[in-house]
Image (cartoon, rainbow, N blue to C red; front, side):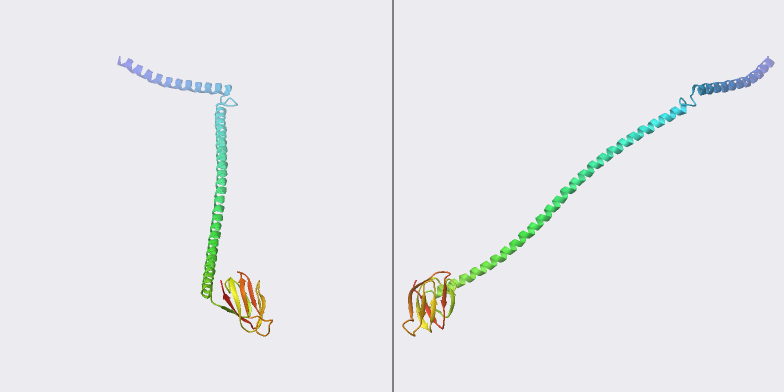
Length: 221
């Protein structure tokens, strides 16, 4: 019995090696048959090859990716052009605002200059009005009193108040001219007079005295 078991074990060991070799041969044969069949069917070469199929997929993916990138680029380009246009519009608005601000500053400077000029003119006017008031005050003081005038030209309202006067000879000889009076004053002959009654003098009128004549203008109104 023991011998039979030993012989069976040896047979199994030998059979295991043989079976391993047979299985390996079968596997090699199957791989060869698969490769040959696939090669004849075009799976490894030509347009129907597996590698060609893989290449086609890669090309399609690459093409699609390129199309997607082109679309994204065009979208970005359109967005950039839109933003660039908006920037130009904003810059134009900003330039108009700056021009308006510059014009406003210039107008303010002109207004300030005009205000200074008006203030200066007002001061001059106030000064002239003050002088006129002082002159009128002086004329009021002498009103009713004789005004002595010698040779020269005088303006009624400035040098002598307007009104009605009696003109009296004081000394010398010469002519006296107004809008109404045209006489020779003196004491040389009958042609000369020594008094002229009710001589009207109006504002702006000129009184001219010639020669060495001195006259008193006595206001009566």
